[in-house]
Length: 310
Ligand SMILES: NC(=O)c1ccc[n+]([C@@H]2O[C@H](COP(=O)([O-])OP(=O)(O)OC[C@H]3O[C@@H](n4cnc5c(N)ncnc54)[C@H](OP(=O)(O)O)[C@@H]3O)[C@@H](O)[C@H]2O)c1
Image (tube, rainbow, N blue to C red):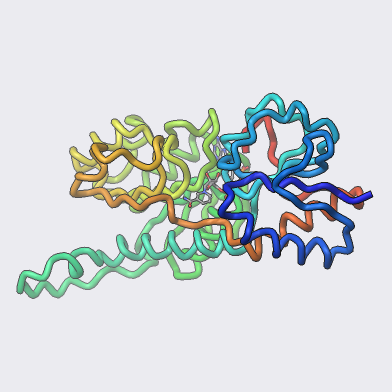
C-alpha cells in the first residue's frame, strides 16, 4: 500500500516541492502518493507550513507524523489536535543562509560600515576599527542556527559567548546557560544576536531589566522571533542610548505595520523576515529522510518537544 503524503503549505510552493519530493521519495525506494488533496483519514504524513491553513488534525486518524517546512514551530507546537510526532525543519541551506545574514550584520556593526557608507561629508577621520578579537558578540540560542552562527563568528576570531537552556560545549565559544548565564552574557555583550525559538519561556527575553545589563551603546540583531523582545523596552533603550542600534528581521505583527515606530527610528534597521528561509532542494531531502525513517521504524529527526514548545 502506498504511503500517503499531504502537502499543506502555501499553494505557490507546490510546483517547487512536488518534483523534489517525488525525486527523493523515489530515490528512497518508497511507494507513495503525494498530493495537496487527500482524504484526511488516508493521510500518513503531512508536509506542513502554517500558511497551508491546516489547523484541525482531528480527522487525520492514521497520521504518523507532521513534518514542518519551518524551523520555528510556535504556530503549531501548542495545537492540541495534533497528537503525533512533530518534526521541525533543520536544513543546511536554511542554516547557511542564516549564518551569512548574521555574520554580515555583525560585521556591519563591528566595522562601523554605516559611518562610511551613509556619511560622506568630506571629513577625513582615520579611525580604524578594532580587531574581531576585541569585539564581544553574544548569541542567545545555540541550536541549529545559533551554533552555526557562533562557530562562524568564532572562526573570524570574534570573542563569542553563547547562551542556551541546557549546558553546551562548542569549541571557541564561551557557553553559558540558566538565568545567571544570561546576566553574565548580556553584561559583556557589544553585539547581541537573538536566535531563540518563540516559546512561553523566551517571551520578552530582552526586556527593560535585561536590556539594562548591556554595556552602553550595545547593538542588537534579531533574526529569531518578534516576541523575544519587549518592543516598548527596546524603544526606550534606543532612545536613552543604552542600545546604540538594532537590526530587526522579525516582529510580533508581520508585515510590520506602516505606522510602527521601528520604521522611522534613526537607530533601527528593519528587514522583512528575510534573514533566511527554508531552501527547497535541501529541505525536501530532510522531509524525505524523515518519511523513510518513519516507514522503516527508525526514530524521526529533529523532533519538537511539545512541552518546551521547540
Ligand atoms: N528570521 C528568519 O528568517 C528565521 C529563519 C529560521 C528560523 N528562525 C528562528 O530561529 C529560531 C531558532 O532556530 P533553530 O533551528 O536554531 O532552533 P533550535 O535548534 O531549536 O535551537 C533553539 C536554541 O534556543 C535555546 N533555547 C530554547 N529555549 C530557551 C530558554 N528558555 N532559555 C535559553 N535558551 C533557550 C535552545 O537551548 P537548548 O540547546 O538547551 O535546547 C537552543 O539552543 C527558530 O525557532 C525561528 O524562530 C528565523
